[in-house]
Image (cartoon, rainbow, N blue to C red; front, side, top):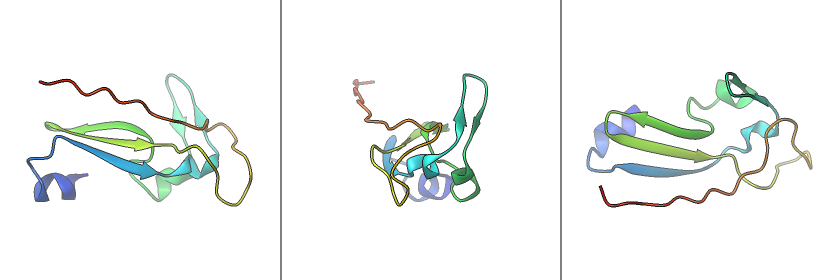
Length: 83
């Protein structure tokens, strides 16, 4: 995210494709783990750095293994408001 923030400081929100969370992981209110974090620093959810936001979707389908373990499919609805 830092690289994009430096190159495009005028962008307030970036919407990223999906990682599928490697289709496995554990998510609770206090803890979040998936093997995908060893590949992508920002792998699911909303991230903020200074005034910029990045949203990474977990995706809806699958790759390879036809299922998910602990990582639920996601369709995000984002409502933009004038600031």
